[in-house]
Image (cartoon, rainbow, N blue to C red):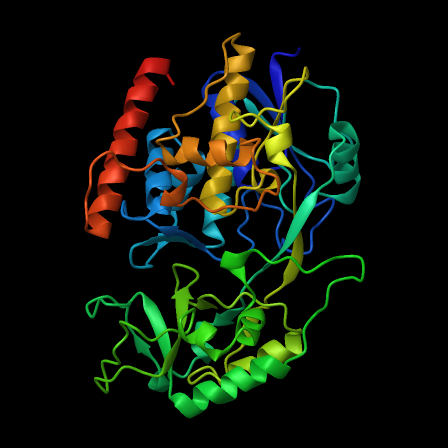
Length: 437
């Protein structure tokens, strides 16, 4: 086994894994196929490019995503550090400047003496050990086939969709208002209010709009927390009103009224020249996306700079293949990380890369692998995707349902969640000290 690690894929997970290895004194070859080979979703050749939303979700300890981010901070995460340095206003969420964030990650990787970034597509599982495969949900077909042949397992997959991004200067601000839900003093979101008639016209448009269809050999298998807006519309108008268009907690400061429905936009960069439509993942054809904006007050003449896209997300049968250290069961020291393992989301992918990187470093050090406590968000997520009792793994965001219940009864939900987070962080601190991470 070599004393130099190989990481394939410089996305969020791969970049994080390489960083964790290098920080522990091990040389890393980090392979990235872009720009030699592109994907349907990426637009640049930079590591850790965000292909969907620019938000890493809530930063509050009453939210499981907030807990996971705090754990990553305490574990010296490259991705969270870069996000903090490039963040843009987004209420209680950690959102980043879409262009500056991957630039910061690239800067940190290139400036580390032990990381060598190699621009080349890997089409077969290499013989070099140890190895971390973090090629993401858009793993190239040749490498996907190689992994499939090596593991002897079929892939599962689902569809993911990205929301359109529009130019800020093309918005009619006379018809919109800035506010965050339930917080009249915050202006982190731009809101496009609809009355009942406008909403019905919008809903009817979505029902009849043309979509980009999957190939005949691919089934439609959407991830429930990332449904395309048009798919949600077909489940009924109330699915929109209780989903991304819900008006609850958004009083129009100009009129003092609560709209029938609201389309929210979030800043996509620090200059505030771009906004993305919150919850508007879509597979609509591009001309239809232009038409869709005509039904949204304030966006009738808005210009789309990046259209929503639909692409296949691929992931392996982790319960049958991986341990909670993200290592492949078997003789060879191979780890997987990122959405390829069945974790879903930016922060979750980062967490898997961090755990894989730490355990790969321990392997090189001749130490046993670490299973993070299941009472932490990091450990709970790893335990979920590696649980052999799962017969049909579904991609999963971190949530408090994955953590064990509290041993004390707390009726109020927010207090209960905060206590659970505090307990998890205490468990993590003890674990770090005990294991010398």
